[in-house]
Structure formats: C-alpha cells, structure tokens
Image 1 (cartoon, helix red, strand yellow):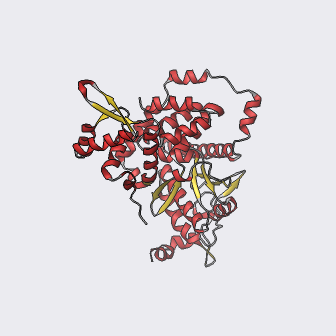
Image 2: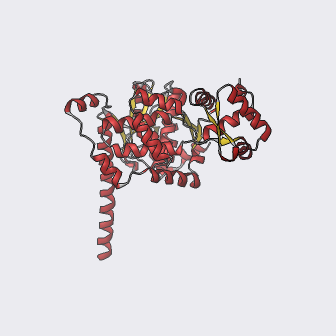
Image 3: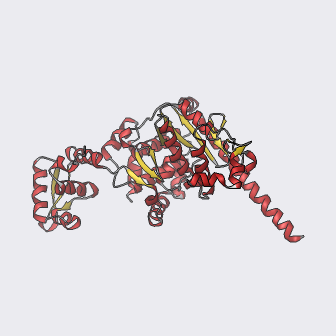
Amino acid sequence: MTVNIEQFVGGRIRFAILNALAGSGKPVTAYSIAIRYGLDPAATYRYLAEFAKVGIVESVRKAQKQTAYRLSEGVGKAAVNFLQYLKQEQRIDFDEWMRPKAVSDRAAKCLKARLSAGEVAELAKGEALGVEEAERLLEKRKSGELEALIEAGRIGFHRTFKQASRKRSLRYAMIE
Amino acid sequence: MAKKKFLKSKRNKQRFTVKGKRTGFKKSAGLDGVQPVFGARRDAFASEYKHLLQEQDRFKRRMYFAAFFAKQLQKIGVDAILVGGAAVELYTHGQFETADMDFAVTDAQKGAELLKELGFERKDSVWLNTGLDIIVDVSGEGYSGDVGRVRLVNVRNYELKVAGVEDLLVNRLYSAKFWKSNPQRDLEEATALLSIFAGSINDVYLDTLAKKNDIEDFVKIVKERALK
C-alpha cells in the first residue's frame, strides 16, 4: 500500500511550503516561495497564515513592510523533520552518484571541508589523553581496526614496491 | 547462456577447472593469493570476480564488492549494513579513503563463512583478499544507529545498505572529541558529510544525538564550517 505523505499536511502545496522553509536558513516571504517552487502566490500566503495560526511557522516583519516566515523552533522543525523522514528518498543510484558533475560538486565540498593549517595547529594544542581515559576509550575500539590498517599498509607497500622494481628493470633494459 | 560461453573458452576452462571439476580459481591463474575455496556460490562469484578484477578504480571495485557481498549475505538470511569509514568513503566518493570495509551484520559467523567461500583469508580479526585489495571486517554486534535512516544504494543490480548520514556524523564527531586519534580527519569528514547532505539531514535527530553524546559543541563548529 502506498501512503501519500503529502496528505499528512493537506496536500502537495502545503508540503512544498514546509519543505521550502526547512531548506531555507533565513525567513522567506510567501511570494518568494511561490515563485521559486511554482506555486500559486495567494494559496501560498493563505497556507502560511494557517501554519502560523497553529504555531508551525512564525512570521517576521522585514523591511518595506514585508512579512517573512520561518519554521517555529519546536513544533515547526519537529513537524518538518517528521514529514521529511517519511518522505525522504533514501535511495541513491550509484551510477547517478558517479556522474562527473555530481562527483566534482562533492569533491569541491570535500576540499572546502579540509582544515586550514591554522585550524590544524589549533587542534594540536588540545590536551593529550590521560592513561585512564585512553584505556576507557580503547575498550570500546573494535579489535579489527588496527589490523586492517596494518594490512592496508602492507598491500600498499607491496604494490609500490612492485611498481618501483618494474620501473627499475625497464630502465636497466633500456640502458642495455 | 553468457556464463556457459565464458566457461567454455579455453583460458577460463583452465582457470576454473581442476581435473574436469569446476572449482573456482587456481592460484596459478595469476590472481595473487586467491584460494579456490568456493562452495555453492562459486559460479556467481566467478563471474563477479572477473568484473571486479577488470575494474581499475579501487573505489568502484570496493563498492561493487560491498554490494555483491551484501546481496550474497541477504540470500542466506543475513542483513548487512556498510558502516564506518567505508560508508563515509561512499558518501564522499572516495575523497576520504579507508583501509577496510566494516559491515554490521546480523550473523557474524555466517558472514565469516561466506567471506571464506569468496576466497578471503583470515588475518587476525579481519578478512583479506590481496588480489582485489579488499579488507573486510564483519561485526555481529548489531547496528548502533537508527535503521530507519539507513540509505539504500543501488549498485549495478544489487542493493547496498549504508549507515545513515546523521549517525556517521555523530560517530565522527564523537571520535574527534573523545578518541582524538585523528581529530583533523574526523572533523573534515563530518564537515564534508554535512555539506553534501545539507538538504536532507534531520536536524532534530542530529541535535538529539549530539546532546546524548555530549558533542553539541562539535556539531555547532561543523555546522558553521559546512555552511560557511
């Protein structure tokens, strides 16, 4: 049986509005939501007012007498997370995931996530673990982690060594 | 039909047969260290192994294997979830490489038996296949995260279950704050995950877990860095 999650909030438009608010980090106006998601502006405004009445969204007065909306801290965010949880497309297609454009976008984000030299130095200043604390934490470590690391190092070394010796023999052959 | 044709070819016959019996791979076939110990599933793995060997990209090869392994486990009634560093590697498309592939399985004994059948050798507490350059660790302690947040990845014709992003994030940040074995990498991985999945992360769940694990400060730092 397929359950239409959008019906939980009374339809597609209401669901789209809540998603729009969840995806926006700052308050947004009804008009900008409607334009961005191709919704009817009057309906968008009406539904936002409904949500405000029941406390799912909060209105904020902006400059030029505009009213913007955001999800309320408790009820609003919880409601949206619940709906997203039900609706979420948890499935990832590996081939899609590996498309060059998607890969380069993610690589850029990963690059941005790298810590700067200053941040690394700041981290290094952190206090070292005491023996007791280290032992307590080590108890939770899985036994295979270190072995895996050693084996990976061994394989990597073996491969590099093989490549190097292949290059060297090629060089000798050329000299001869 | 294609499989029959494949096994009929002279080279493959030599590879997969010993004295007329189909047994799997011979060590002499040039597959470093692979032992011919396949059981009933040998044919499926023979064909899959060929694909895996042809795949030059280490990241893809590992993910193809992970999906295949999960499928084989599913056939014998064992549920498997890819967790830890390998899950982060998948989500970040190999930007953060890891040595081994950790699986949380419902039956570690069956998982180990299958790995043996698939030509893996036990080395201390991990399973190793030098030919494929894959190290696997199966844990039967169960999945510590929320099963409802596990993501399904379609790899070829297989379905791979991968640990939820929120759970991985918390795991990394906990490690950065308390383990301190490699806080730089943990923070970088968490930031990358948060920035890649910014649109689909459940904030309430993340905040609850952060509070429970006493890592709210680290979550805040990473959120600031990811949204910068």
